[in-house]
Length: 312
Image 1 (cartoon, rainbow, N blue to C red):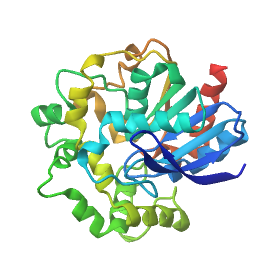
Image 2 (cartoon, rainbow, N blue to C red):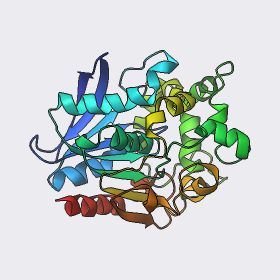
Image 3 (tube, one colour):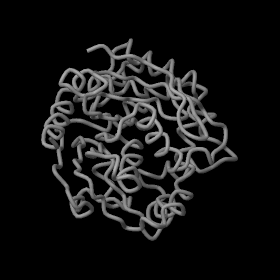
Image 4 (cartoon, rainbow, N blue to C red):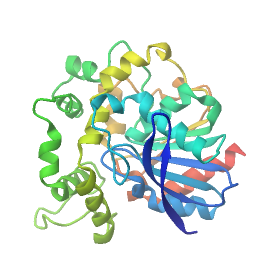
């Protein structure tokens, strides 16, 4: 089924989002939220699979990414702004309820949507990043005090505004993206082919990502991280709250976030089910890394469809 790309101005204050939409307007809705550093195009396989199965699929470039608007202020990227964009997009499309699927940072937004507006969610799928309830410390502070040199130390480095990391990333967006897509995927690069791509990306697909980040830069996405302390303050009313909507977790067995979250973040994949009142499934895809929906598109689409059918 053909997908269309639209520019929608949503919310108050308004923001312009570039959104890929596929499927019949009266079909059950599925909202796909990407992470860092990706765009709505990272869902290209699932968009078509879900639309062909009878769902209305919505995949935005979120604020600061791709061809969507890029606010200039760090404070314009807090958790209320990011979740507010999702609700405003559903309102614009006159969708009362949707299943929300989030990958990486998109999973953080999706989990908070389930806390803030459970009335708008039929179901929730968290991919690659487990639900991290608000704890006694913010995520950056927890990393600083427990394992600043560990696998999530980059989140602390991203807080530095005097030496902004996006200046380094923006200087070579092609090299940045190639390094990140290799670095936390399930494959190992060949040192003899420094310009090669992981097998889940064709040259044309990679070019789409490169064009997007050449346009947007990495600063918007970095600003999501710079609001982690602020988000901890803002979400005080949801301290250690459980998620009540039907939920599935999906991750790759070679994903460093899935493997390391138990010891380094407040979310735990080992005790994940206890953080929900209606936890339906924990799906692990053998051999897949962090870019699971791109590395194993058929398996991810099949798992999503099984979850969606179970909600009917």
